[in-house]
Length: 189
Image 1 (spheres, rainbow, N blue to C red):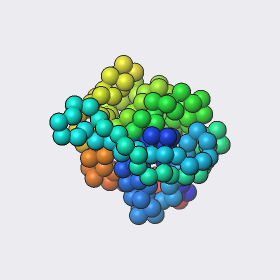
Image 2: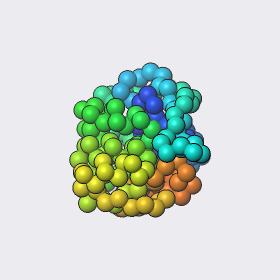
Image 3: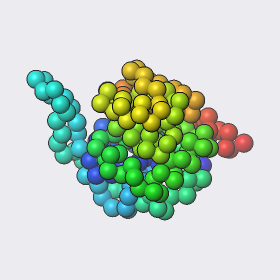
């Protein structure tokens, strides 16, 4: 088993999505892009521009979803990644996404989250007592749901690995890949 879910929707952050997509391939895993429907999604790019106090957004690349949330059989996947951007705010109430998210947490499978991705496991009721990094503006979303905010580029809490923004990919992605390799090796025995 080497399939790993990448959760996206319209307005997923481009770098948050494509960096893990290609890192998974590099490590010998098959990234499977999952979204509300099986179709093409418009990603965005986010950055706080010099002189700005809020995030500026513009269109990024598009990405094709391989599978709809409703069609996911989580036992067929090794791990899950929650991408950032504005998408998590809009997809977090999807009942099938909540079902899948809860399954990965209950089964202690390798999970990664960056930036606004935290909004999905928080909505699914899976962050209680868990230490996580996220973008500062999502700290409230994490803490109101019982999570513990940690302002570091890589936070590992058991099977859960997280980073604050795409600037942290080089810090936390290796820790998550290591968990996936360990899970893959264990499943092969």
